[in-house]
Structures are given as structure tokens and as C-alpha cells.
Image (cartoon, rainbow, N blue to C red; front, side, top):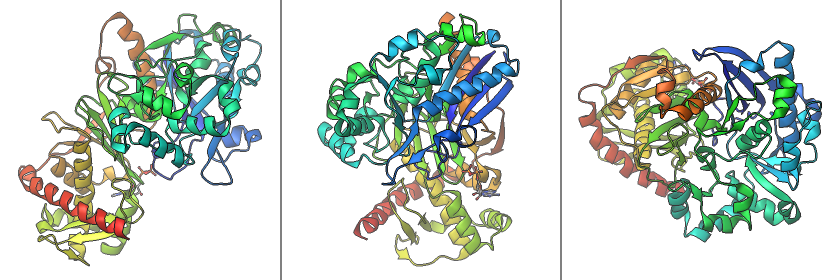
Length: 539
Ligand code: ADP
């Protein structure tokens, strides 16, 4: 039996989405057949009201600073393990465990804490034993956007935003850990100097289990603006730009499938774990989702929820100003990329209401009846400020690339859906993604129930679209990673060899003429986008 736990956001809470839910700690256990045999969660606000969080966080009065109490996370772990014990869960059968934490968040261990971790006594819950172990008691999390000055400084120090992306996989982002550390060093230098080790939420949680500082894994480490994603070491220039002595406080990063230790004696004595139970490096929630969706080389997962998100498996990345490249969590020489499009289902709903009387059936019928390529009409629909690209407003172009103020309703619907998917292909390819003959698109989220929308996706990417269920994907991903982590110790098996292919259903295949039709349109879309960007800048 393997199990994992997760300090979670829901699947929809991708970094740039404004849906807030870093709200609970979850646990699942799976058996040898990877079937879930135990599941539970601790809800931070409801189960631990003494910390006074809303959605698991404290939003500070400036609205930019967002933190979570580190002891709340630890107390949640105590609670969830005690409940498992009370329910009769047999910890001695657990062969391996792993986990995931919300990306970018950071934890600051005070000097002397390593010794405390080494000498935990089974009688005390962790939140009591570790209560004075943190130099910063409120951990900055991914929702924090208070570090703009640090971001500009970091980009300048390495020669610009694109240069930083070339090194670390992303331009500077406020929530990325390096910038958060830089802010703490600047504003609370005494707290920084008292810090012996800085963990990510993921490696912090793994540290609790091994009774020592767990290394940061390559994949979650890529969300810090500090790791050179090519040689997988901390970049000296980035470290220096953020804070002095940082290399030592971070420790070395390791491949995500590394066994970071057995569980500590504390867990053996208090809960009855086997002393041979392996802890596989914990990772970030997006990398864990990629593992949970069982993406394979060349695959794309497209989540069509409130926002649209693309997970890409990439071999030769070309980092860009939009999107993120992370080291791949299941195959460490490869990469994954993440692209978030804020105007997803909400925009589709708006056009549905305006152009097809609020009916998805009518909307779908229009997609069935209208010609692929929309007779050359293209549209950009950004009801809210888009992230990919940074643009706002609605822009329509006729076949001659002239801006027009309106489209017929039918044309409008197809322009919206074609535009949304052309943008996804263009941005994926800019990050180094190559569509291959074996490429599968795995679609999830509310709009993946709409076959006509999926047909447009399939035509534009010229690849078959399958639908998959992704409930609990980050959690499951870590159970699979735990299984893989112990399997690779004895033989060089791939992640795909350990987990069976995901249950998926072929939904649609591309039309024969699709690639020929969309190639020139993709070029035109990119050209029109330049005009849209210029207009947005000029507003
Ligand atoms: P999230 O998890 O981000 O809240 P979901 O993945 O549950 O979102 O997707 C919800 C969205 O799915 C709704 O906003 C709705 O617009 C969209 N949706 C539901 N049914 C359809 C449909 N038949 N066609 C297109 N979109 C749909």
C-alpha cells in the first residue's frame, strides 16, 4: 500500500486563476492495483478555526501579502494522522509515501530545528514539538503578489526578463519563491539570518516525515526563479540577487523520484509505520497533477474549466515570457510546461448568452454548421485582462485582416472557439512543444463534455482528443510517484511502466483537411495578435 498527502488547492486553482482555495490537507492511500482504499481531508477553516484563516489563508490589509500559518499545516497533519489511526488504518503496510504542496510557498526553519526534527518524541504531536522551529511563522504562499520590486531587481540582475526565463523557465513572478525570500531578507533581515533552512511547502512536508531537512525536488524547485532548469543547480546570479548565503539555506535539489529517506522513528513509534517505509520527494501541485493525469511523452492535457490551462510534456524547451517551464516530475531529463488562459469558460458562457440564447445545444449546433476556418474571420475575446497574452478587450478581423466591429452570431461563436485554441497551439509551440504523430490531447474540465468544442480543438492541433477524469489528480499523482520512486531503486523502469495508462475515452479525431486549413490561419492569428497587443499597450 502507498499513500500520499497533499496541502491542496482544488484542480481549478491554477496559479494565475483568481479562484482561491489553498484550503485543506488531503490524504489518500492506494493498494497495489493503484485503487484508492482510504481518503480523508482536514479543512483548515472548519477543522482548525483557532488559526482564523479564510480559505486556508490570511490576506493582509495591503491585499497583496498573503500567508498561511505554518503551524496550521502541521496541526492538520497531526489531525489527519490521528484520525487514520483511530479508524484502524494499518500504517505498517505502507511501503512508500509521497506528497505535494501548493507551489511557490516557502517555510523558514529557525537555527537548531534540524536537531529538533532528529529528536522528536512519539508522545508529543508535531505542532507542539515544532512550535518554536520557525523564524517566519506566517509562510508566504502562491497568492502573494507583494514582491514587484524584487521581481524587477532579479530580472535586471540577470540581464532582463527573457534571460531570466532562459535560465529558470519563467520570467520573474511575484509569487515565485526567490522573490519572496528577497522580500523577507530586505524587510526582516534578522529573521532571515536566524533561518537555517528554507523549504518549499512540498519539501517542508517531506521533512516532517523523514525527521530531517528534505531536499527540494527539481520540478517544484523550478517555480522559484532560482533553479537553472538545464543543469538543475541553483543559479549563482539569481541567488545573489535575492539574498546572501542562500545556497546553503536551500540545500541541493534532487530528481523528483528520489527516495529522500525512510520515515523517522517518530512515525514508527507513534503511528506504527514500518521503519522501511520510503518517503519519495514531495513536489508541487501542478507537477503532481501531470503525474496524476498520467501524461506521457508528447501529450498535452487541456483543462477547460473557469480558466483554461495547458499542461505540456516537452523535450526541448524554449522558455518564453508567457508560460512556465518546469523540470518534468516523472522523467527528470524532460520538461513540463504550464500555460494559463484566464478567459476560458466564463468567456464562452458570455458569447453563448449573447449569440446562442444561453444554450450550449444551440452553441454546439452552430459549431457543427459553420465551416472550419470561419471563412477567414478571426477573433480575440478577453473579457478580463488575459495572462496569455497580456491583453484585454474584444477584437475581430475579417479575411483581409481588417478590424471589424461585429460578426454575425454564427461567425462570432466559431471565431471565439477557434481563437481560443489557436492561441493555445501558438503559445505551446513557442515554449518548444512539437505536435508528433503519437500526440494525444487529454481534455478535462466542464467544457470537455462538449464534443463540438473538442472537434475544433482536435482540428487546430491536428491530434485526437481523449477525455479523462481528473478528480484528485494531484493526490493520485503522488501515490503513483511513490510507487515509481521505490520501483526505480531496483530497476530503471519508467513512470509509465509503473502506472497503467489513464482511463480515457477517444472523443474526436481531426478532420483530414484540418492541418492544411489551419496552418495559414495560425500565422494570421499571430500577426493579428501583434495588432491586438499594440492596441492594449496604447490604451
Ligand atoms: P472549475 O473546476 O474551473 O470550476 P469546471 O471544470 O467544473 O470548472 O467547468 C465549469 C465550466 O464548464 C462552466 O463554467 C461551464 O461554462 C462549462 N461547461 C459546462 N457544460 C458545458 C458545455 N456543455 N459546453 C461548454 N462548456 C460547458
